[in-house]
Image 1: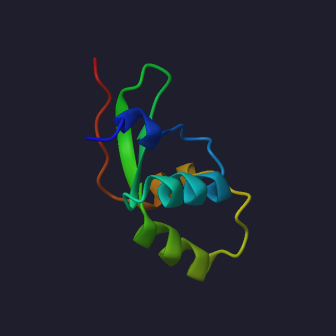
Image 2: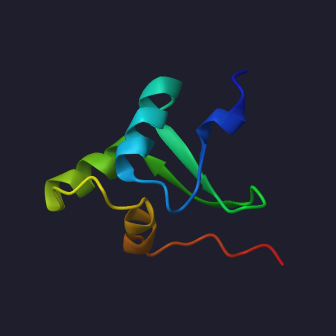
Length: 77
C-alpha cells in the first residue's frame, strides 16, 4: 500500500498543486485535511475537470471545490 500521506492537501492548496498531487500519486484523488490531519473532504480528478470547465483560473484554492458541494464532513469534536 502506498503512503496515504502523499494524498494529503490543505484547503488552501492551489488547484495547480492539487493536479500535480493527483497526477503523481496516480490515485485519481487528493484528501483535503486540516492542520491536525483530520479529513475535511476529498477532491477527484473529475471534480477538477468540472471546475476547469466553469472557471479558467487555476490559481484558486481547492476550497472552491469543497464549497461547491452540498455534502460536508462534520468537524471532529
